[in-house]
Length: 190
Image (cartoon, rainbow, N blue to C red):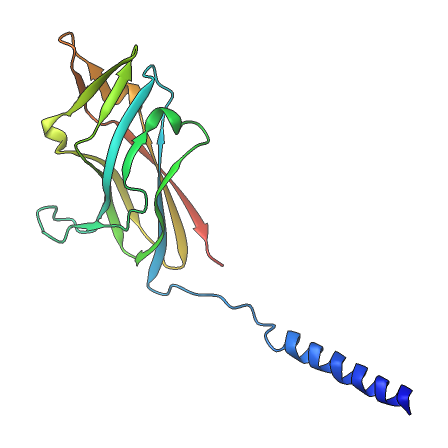
């Protein structure tokens, strides 16, 4: 009798465990029917400077052809604003600026980094304040020219050419004229 009771408890326990674990065999996935996910990362190039600090305050995408339209540029949720030393983020190292942000699937004309005022460079132990070229308007813009497709992840890596972007003048000033390339990788969500 005792054995029969123990056997019933064991069977009920196994069935309960089986039912609890098999109730949700379907893989739960989220789809993005009219949108896509975007990541943006920053990387520097090897440099002759011992430090190249740039203050990043925003990352934007141009989504309208008419650049003069006030809605042409869309700000992304930049998770790592602040000062980044480009000499420390080279080769296999990057700083994630935008992390899997969902945006509408649309044509992207350009990607833009917006710089703050706290930009410096260090060479031979001396720190110089970087003067940003007036024509750059405190930004660095790269052409993307890509229609974003739904249910994809677009990973943009902005490679900042440190030595080409920073010129030292004979008067002892440092000038920033941003030179940047954009690498784009596409990943399928499912």
